[in-house]
Length: 379
Ligand SMILES: C[S@@+](CC[C@H](N)C(=O)[O-])C[C@H]1O[C@@H](n2cnc3c(N)ncnc32)[C@H](O)[C@@H]1O
Image 1 (cartoon, rainbow, N blue to C red):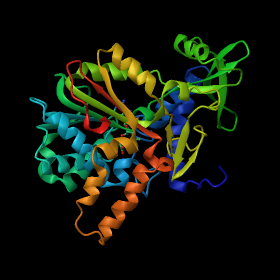
Image 2 (image 1 turned 45 degrees about the vertical axis):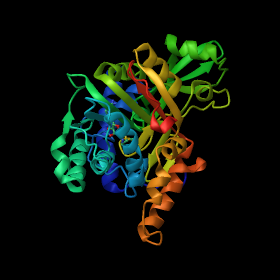
Image 3 (image 1 turned 90 degrees about the vertical axis):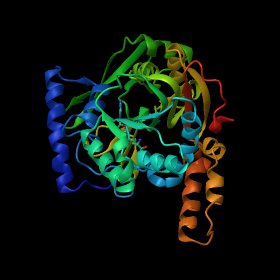
Image 4 (image 1 turned 45 degrees about the horizontal axis):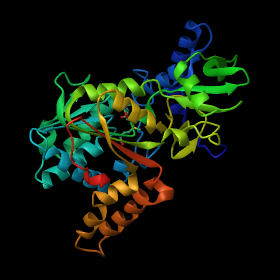
């Protein structure tokens, strides 16, 4: 924590704007708001939130780097999985949630064109208007002739689609309820403000039956802290509702439930990212840092099955990318002495190595009921 860079004066001024809005909400609520509401405001307050505001978040100049930002290999490899799904009759659409800088959309469109398998339409559902603009610019620069295929949606498509849903690192950016187990029950965390206008934690009795079930099932003991994502189930249900036929690929860092709520993971999974420094305090640098929580993939699978989807694949990023042919793509680069080849090799290591992104990131594939083909990435 001591090594965290200090925000610049303009950044502090930016943060101050959001801080005042949150303080007002806290006062209106009688002194404290649930942590999930704080996280929602910190990330998505319409004007000053981390994702909604005009701040460079992605890549080397930003706060963190995602797989599609790290390397074009990610989109090129993922495109092969999309190709398999899009080759099915009438599968003509990709719907991407939370498209970030637009780099994955541009990369997928470019690769699918090369594979002779362009979707008729590429839909993007992005909550941040600022990022929608960023995505338009990225796609316009990288694949200008394909921009006309891209449509930005303000809500889920009215007509269910046939094809693919893709979401990379979207679930981890959803607000979570933070709770702790105490001797006689469960408390959830709230955010209040002290006399120096610093955000501070408060706890209140928690009556959430889903959390109570988890605590009982995993015998979570006194002092155990963790998170629960209340938006996950409705979000997966929404995907099921808008996918008429095809496959959804959800990519994120996370675990199955017994690992997620393992007794040893007693401090939860909240992680913040500021200028490539990771730390666990979401109450500082409000509006300037990303706040994330790991994804409970068992909850994703259970919600999918309840909504009529099948879980047709679950693996880590390394296995998935290898199955989709990442090494073949590397092999097809003719000049093995070139700088490009060298760069790709370095990037492939980060995507695949267990201690980098290879094992921490998981991919879950959900398919509509009639899907009966083994997916390329999960053979
Ligand atoms: C961590 S970034 C990942 C960006 C991009 N997918 C990537 O991999 O580089 C999270 C993205 O999800 C968006 N987002 C968060 N919640 C969302 C939701 N419910 N629906 C659509 N987009 C959402 C954010 O605005 C942001 O673009």
